[in-house]
Structures are given as C-alpha cells and as structure tokens.
Figure 1 (cartoon, one colour):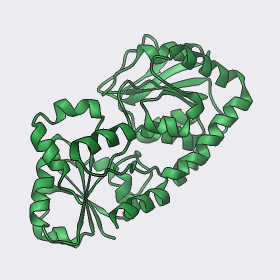
Figure 2 (spheres, one colour):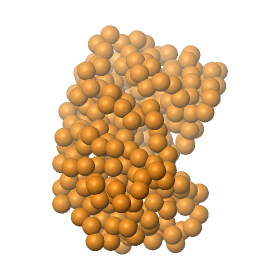
Figure 3 (tube, rainbow, N blue to C red):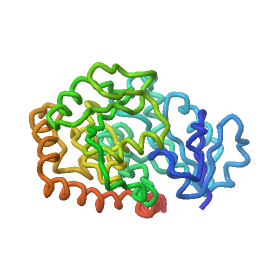
Length: 305
C-alpha cells in the first residue's frame, strides 16, 4: 500500500531508513512511504496513495479540511491522530468548534494512548480505536549492552519539565543521576552529574543502554515512546501511570504520580534485587513486541479495512 504522511512541517532527520526516533515517523518506514509538505503536494496526486496520514496539530488543522474536500468519493483512506498530550490541546486548538469538526472528517480517527482515546470518543461521537505509534523493536534490541554503568537515566521533556522529583527518586538508587531528553538548551547541572536538552538519537541511546535503571516522571498523559526504548534495551523503567507504554511494559514499576515513596523504594529494589530486576526487564522485552512493526501494521490495516 502506498502511504503518505502529509504535513506542514517535516522533521528531516527522521526521514531515513536507518534507526531513528520512535513514534509517528515509524509508519513511513513500515509502509516504505513518503513524507511530503502540504503546500508542495498537488491535490491531483492525492489519489496516488492508498493512505494519507495527518498528524493533527495547530499548523496542520487546515490540511484535513482541504484533503477531504478533494477526496469526496475516493478509495484513498484518510487517517488522522491528534498530536501531543490531551492537556495541551487547549492552547493548541483555540478554535474548539473547528477542532471538533475536524475530528469528524477522516475515514479513520485513532488515538495513541487510552486517555486520549476516551476524550476523542466523547468529542467526535464516533468509535476511536487505540493504535499506538510503532516501535522499531528489531533494530533497538540489537543495541542491548550487557555491561552497565552506575547510571540512573532520568528523562526530561520540554512539555512537562520535571527535574527535581526525578532527582529525588534517583537518589534512592545510589546511582549517578543523569538527565537527558527533549528540551531547549542545557538543563541545570546542580542535581545531575550530566544533563542536557536535545541530543543526537544515537548518543541518547548509547547512554540509556549503559544505564542500570531509568526514571520518567510525567504529570500529563503520554504515549511514552521512552518506555519502548527502555523495554528494547532491557533497562528497567520506574515511571508514572500517566505514561501509557510504561503501564504496558513496566506494570511492576509504574505508579500514580503521588506515590513518590513507592518509586523511591522501587529503584532501590531494582538495584539490590537481581531476581526482581530480571523479572521486570523480561516482561518488558516480550511485551514490547505487541507494538513492533508487524503488530502495529496489522493493527492499523485491520481498522482501515
């Protein structure tokens, strides 16, 4: 099937056939498809594709209205998910009526995590399947490193800028706390031995795969591709239950954000109890295949057809 991700902004570094960041752009690799700018794609070429995918965000709201006005009686399937966390939608879509109207337009509207699924179902008054973005399990699993350093890897994200609480959790592990992830500019170094915002993906993976444990403290609902990377690299993740993939892959080490004491005790248990450590990573190693390329492609096609 010919696949097109149609957008107003292309993350050029993600348009590759090599191992790259997990999430949205994995669909292009699965289908060996295209990513094209909306303004550079002639409408007469829409029907050259079997699937046109729109990742709805502020700048891409006009795309769904235009594409569906062109493809009125077409066999081309228009599929759409809504980007970012539900808690961010207020500022992303100030025109609520237009946003809700857009949800009625695609042939398939899908959610990438369960809370988003609930909200989209209520807003759109239609069935909204749960179809998380895929994980490149095969290539990530090839990067597992048996030798680990005394590192507690704390994830930073610019949309939920938690720094202090992950450091509190990390200190109970007795390991060296490192904070890396997605952020603007350098992060404070006072509480971490190493910290930084956006780093090259391979550098990110190299530090993660050398870590004994990982910590993610989200207070907004997230699909959480980080948990998929931890699962493939056999790094146990202690996280909040707001992270969907963390709940799926690491049910023994995922807690409500209020349960700080449990997180602190769990990182200590992971460091001191090898049997518990192995149980956690083995479960995640197997479970992540539910979201690998093969399973994800089958899940999407099942709902399209």
